Length: 557
Ligand code: NOJ
Image (tube, rainbow, N blue to C red; front, side):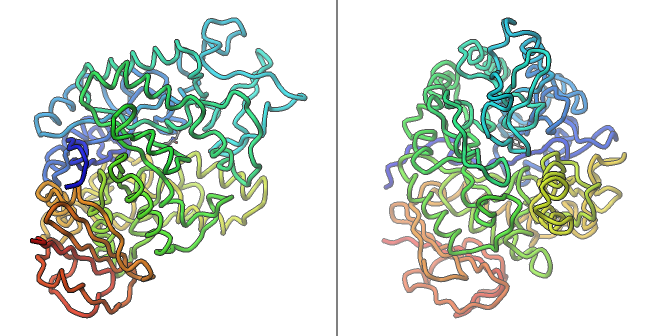
């Protein structure tokens, strides 16, 4: 038996909702809380036991809610606090826990504290944010913002710069100030006392800044400064304090979005003695097809690299910390278009990718629409994008720096833009995919006539039902949750095969990542195994069909 403590959040499957694009109940073209309430039966049918809501707080929406102006109010477009209370109650009645997004590396520049802070150098809130004098009449250092340009914005009124790792409407909070930390903790308690079940913590690896503010390696985009700033000197101290002050008093799911996290750092954030967070999101696997210096540069998918990275994390955290498992979220393009095949093998490859991920050790996250095999959007031109990161990047790369041509950049955006996963959820084949009766805030993917929930719910072999089965298997077989992972056939460039072992039980997971037939022999010990799930109806021997995946279960004794 592996030496892993059992926890409900290790056994859970989380469904991420991006509320703006999920379901619109009032016809204003923007998803809302009442819209989510209407879909609780759908979530229940899928079988997920936790929902993570991307931010629903009051916000001017420079970055779709990741810029919060009031942490204790609901965004006007999304509804009211009463709607929220009802959503929480109904989720709990349906056996679904609700996890909130906690965005506390930065606030909106329209937050009352920042409005005060920028008023004068001696304002009591000045120190809530990070203000620096110009150096030689310029920015204090060369750090680049994740959304392009410098991380420093000059403020005429007081002649100083403030720090913003993201847009200039997202000033970074000064975590060195204990009053800041105390107000964050109070706000967290306020939500937890309402009954929410945990937090996904936005870019939590960035909250502690190195007081030296040294220059980073200059790069093509701001992302190169990320590695300088992540996992700062006091980050673990802050999280341990947060744990003591707040988290330890409740039974929660906590997951830290840890940009720039290494395996060694993850072992501290998600340590199994539970002094900090339950788990982290790491991004090594979803970065393997990006250029190191330019996140918009495209590199081909490399299965060998994927196996190496996933295996490193599976083995590296075993017994020491806990993995989260994801292919997609609101910042990533659709996985079936990225590493699968969104044409003739869309369903087979969506199911294969799901098998590969859901059979690993860790807590799986399903991003809305992934369970339908939703695809990237065929964007035509820049006017169809809504995401400020994508729009800024186009301006910077094409118009200012002239590093990419317009066509090259549009090709990159079609592949990588976050808007690919922010198009409305495809509920049925009525107008606007049943998402809204009004005009959607971002275009609906025209393939909703073929790809939609209503069609898949009535078809037993749909991607939806495949996810439903994967989720149900996880509830049924402890080996899927707690079993030890081992990579098999490491040198095979086309197939991802691994085993899981717990006590007497073993699983063999086999995934063909190509659109070709690949010869494959099932290892002797699994030949009489029970097939738990497969994306092809009939079993075949000696050859794997395009994107074929299956899982065999055996008892060793
Ligand atoms: C990470 C979030 O996932 C992303 O959507 C957001 O733009 C940045 N953090 C800034 O909050």
